[in-house]
Image (cartoon, rainbow, N blue to C red; front, side):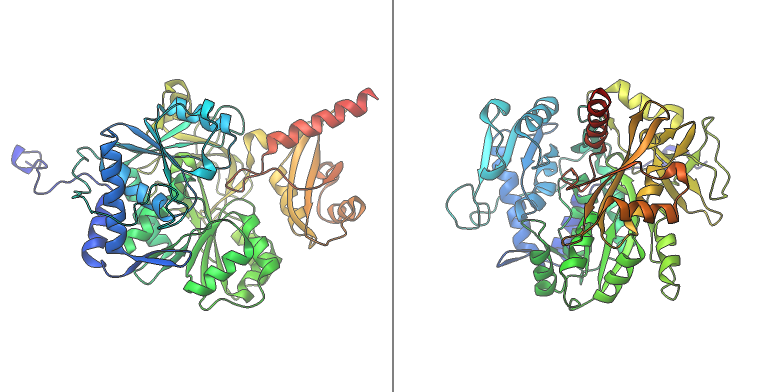
Length: 527
């Protein structure tokens, strides 16, 4: 009876899910509210809608249409936000480029994506030999006259969602970091982007009074889908030209920022530079290294409330969230709880931890397995790579490669990446566990622990450490600290000091450190 033809979906009761409708509603409900702030300019949502329409009209005049890939090499500026609506409004696919990649790497992505057009700032244009395709170079500022300016001019008609006939259409193509080989193109759909964006609205408590500072690169998972989420809420996007602690703190004060997202390294920068609390408390979401008691204490006193998220490019950004724990608990307890990756994001499927047979591990906080994900906010697949797609989805789940435990309360906690486990003398050492101990040392800003070849033990842990500015840190001091906090086989056999290589999103490039450790060990063994 309930499958009768007259109950089937029809135009009156079914519409493909797309984040383009989120802007459409905001233009209807919040047209006069401030939408985007950049430098000394603030635009209303009505004006932002006009920017989107001009951009879409210009792209259409270049021949862009359904299924075409438009690559953009832009910082966190208004046109980058507009591209998240203007490109898919044509039925095209948005490819946001990591602007910190080398020209040849960008050239590889442009070629693999089959990009039809590149929209860029002059500073981020790749070498001509690496980008043989039409280009649109934007102005350095509104009215600067040194490039294409979509901030003024006639406003073309634009039906935002008219080109979306199937919610499974691709909306964006995001490339992974490529830390272990060539980057893979991750395909997002309109449906997944819509649901993850709405999950962010719920998880972060975004409203029309929210003011979101773009410390997170918009090229990273489409800003964890928050480009669409903040717009859905009718909040203010505060654009940021660069990740500079003084500029960040200035913009927080200037716009009374309520939300931001960033890598842990940015939090340590803020802790070192902030002198007074912001006008309002700021909700910060971060991922990666577990927050230390010192970081939690310092941020809380300065007016920053921390949430810990976990996810991947393949999960549209956040897949789980760990909200702040009991504020009355002592700092060590809060830090231990905040180190967990938490539970599922509001619109994500459940994050499971399974053994090698695909069975859920015991929720005892010690039995380790691999995190697997399934749900509406998992990628469609890897572009032009069916083999990698099938491998990633083997067993009917998305295999993350992250090793974790499940605590009795159901929260998951990552122990390590499968490839980052160090096997020394037959014992498994979690690099994350050692890094967590090192991050508790007051003079350590960042630490990364990798496996170095060893003729006796097979592998031993080596620690690469970036000290805090002005700290007089020594290997002996760290060795003593580790002796107090780690079993003997887990302690780093060597400490190497200096800046750590990072991706544009703040991830430490461990493959470079592993190579350095192997080269150092080989040269010393040969001498």
